[in-house]
Length: 298
Image 1: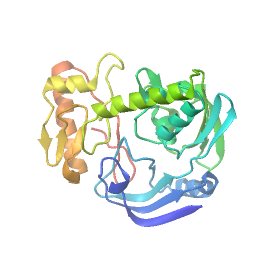
Image 2: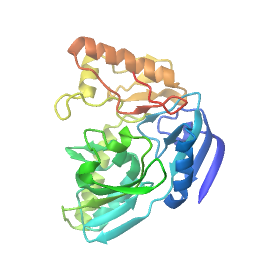
Image 3: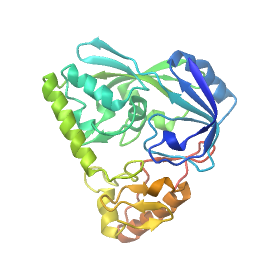
């Protein structure tokens, strides 16, 4: 089933709260219903973007001159005791807690990160030394012809905040299969998830943002937030965008009035300062999108 909405405002659908109207928004409740429209969109060379939970994404104030796909399918199936297949539209947090209830703690460290399963696969989200791709067995996706295909984990191109699906926008993640190998009592696993989630949210600054703006230049060793803090970024404001006083790697949308340009101007200012001070080049972790679905580079 597909619901089509014309001139759909995007700002309410994103964590940043930034974005003008999309020409067409497709809310998809069944992945099979997506096959034909996905292939048609690519064949017609129409701009397209997949919008999950709307985190790690900064849309254009001009809106989107094409089709926005909103996956709503979220079925999960336990294939074996430790193997589960889950559809891309399922909330990541609810998926983690479901694995906890089945007695597994593998994904606890990825608690509290906003997004859905498809977004986690695409961006290989990670925290505390654990990455999504570490637990993936295989990924099912639609190719440019709308044909459902499968790739085993070694062929998914997982790297730091990367995957082949991020590099190939004509491939749409439909579902993924995870293999879990860290058994725990359901109560113990759920408690670990809740504790880590509370710890993470306590560190998040209040206000609207897309999460961490920049990638860490050297994962696990050199941290973007520390470089920005040492450069003096905290509290700096341009327009209605502000570097958080609590965490320098968060750029906030003040009062919901920031524009994409406000945020980008502020990000460029402090990227350049960090480069001049340290030699490290900060790269965005979020996807910065123009009105035609193209990536905007800082």
